[in-house]
Image (cartoon, rainbow, N blue to C red; front, side, top):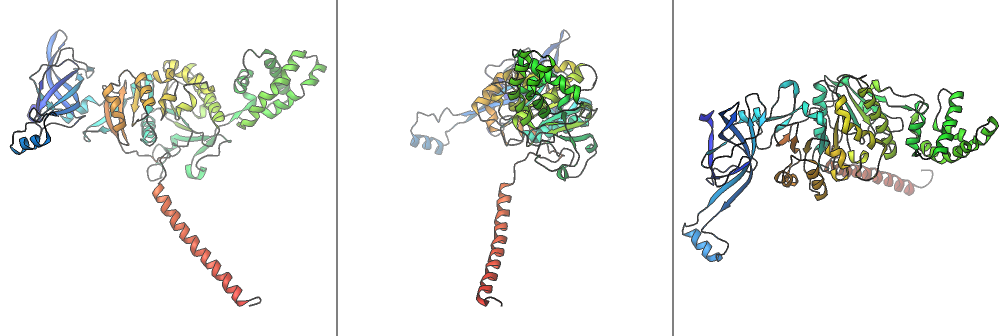
Length: 539
């Protein structure tokens, strides 16, 4: 390997085990973010062994002793014309670590020695550094500075949950689609909460055709959803239904926001449900409301007054459930969504926040119960798109409780979160801090940057400062999914994207053409009217 190495400088000044400075010729200084390699020695198994330490350029600086800021401009020009101007460049690099004999990443314990040569890291070394065995590797792209070096994530890193954070237009939905597709190919069971129908086309390739995994992808939609795309556009769409009469009293109280301290209301509600179940096998919120309205007749059955009063008070809460219009006469079994090597996209587009929140709560609760009881034995990856809507920083939603529970305990049962949002500052920090891996794309909002910094121990200040400068489709990967923080250019997606921005220029051009057609039609109609007027009646 040494015969192909390119030496670009030498270590100078003060150096430590995690960073160093190096000097280089102006013509040979690599760009910022380039990867470097230096030879060093580390103790392993009681003896010193040679290692190849990988580092990344953090800063590039230049200076001149002759051209100082204090000099007059005319003097500076004369120095340059006389050929007396000097120039020196140096860089600062942060140490990423080295690969030990068994392939694990280790950080050096010994300080880097000044005077040692610095090389451009060879592609082979970087590929080993950012790759994993094929059965656990998810290929996401390549290094920003080295397109020839592929970068993979480790599936094992999902065991501590993942946060995908990026401002709108940075490519997070595009990347999330890649992650879901790769996990499915590896045998994962994926359930996606999809508020804007961004992922309904995962069963189609980029040309809109079915692919080899299409039969393992199902889009579920509640009948109350208007749907962003028609069934004809999407293809395979199944109903996700919830039967109201399948709910117990506790869940109805949760939906209706009836607190545990409202004893009379709960008692009255329970009595009404008891009467309904004796009369009907299947009933709707409207039926429950009607029974509550008839509570005055309960006194003829010997029901105590407190329950009757509670039933009357319960009416206003049940009216809110009636307005949701989410319940049907049958419930979709969770087994329809939880299948080995299957992706279920739950299309929530067109639903109110309240209804989408309840469906998320019901669905995630069923998933957690199935997994924690051992009834479903395979790993489940739950993608929560627009996560700030479900687990807000302030206030509580119905789904926030189960999402936090999965974040804290889900990994014990094989349920893993992928939290996706463009506003990390609006997510409850407890949930975000449970995501030990993060994929961060362009982020310019200071509040969101601060939220990211607080939730990630591995994201250094320099990487945080780089976030606004990332281009669309570029990302910083940190955490347990990668051996070391890495900057990636996301690969091309093989499936059709549903969440891309509209072609505003193309649409406006089409509007111009449409307006021309309408003008021609209107002119023709006007000409016909004028001719008819000239010809007079009966002509």
